[in-house]
Amino acid sequence: MSEKAIQLHERSFDHILMSASALDLLGGTAGVILAILGLVHYAPTDMAAVSCIALGAALALNGGLLATERSRVMARAHATTLEAAQFTGGVSLEAAAGLAAVVLGILTLLKIDATALMPVAALVLGVGTIFSSGVLARVNSAASAKAEDASADRSASGEAAFPIAFHVLVGLSAIVLSILALIGFVPLLLSLVAFLAIGVALILSGASVTNRMLDRSRPA
Image 1 (cartoon, rainbow, N blue to C red):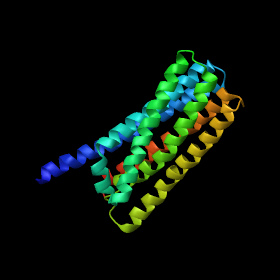
Image 2: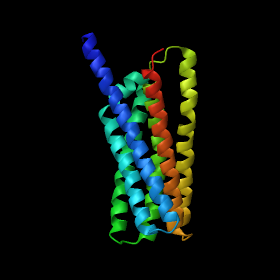
Image 3: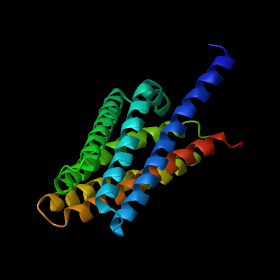
Image 4: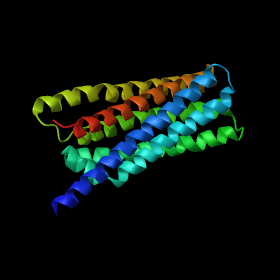
């Protein structure tokens, strides 16, 4: 492969990673804004449903986009066969959770028992967020693969650790909130809080990958 073709290949891959991070940023921001509107009692049921759809769409599209580039993500991240399998499983579950959340959000907009559907959506998104933490780890590794030296690479890994850990914490919190909601504790309120937290996690993950890509593009 010629040097020009390799450069085009690299630019194409960088564009994929930037697109994936942009989806996280946009979906997370929309989810946060809509959840806050619901929490201040502005059409809370509709805001919860649309927030759920925005977050679900971000997870589904992100998972689908990264699934198409799985081999290149794994190659750049220097992943083992087991890590590649875990990444594939994480991407699939992230996309499936996102699609399920979109469906639940649409059903809620159609006035089908929001107090039952929104906690289930929060549970689904919480599980998807936990699995997406592994995906985020591999994507961050791929995004910073061309670090100039070991110390820079360690610094990038350290900066990426917080959003990954935050994903896991938020996912677990969303699951706990959804369970409380399902047993009758202010279901819509707890669902909105879960959506807000998941939106913040998506914003952090999108910002993390974007920062890695910008670091790579800066001249030494």
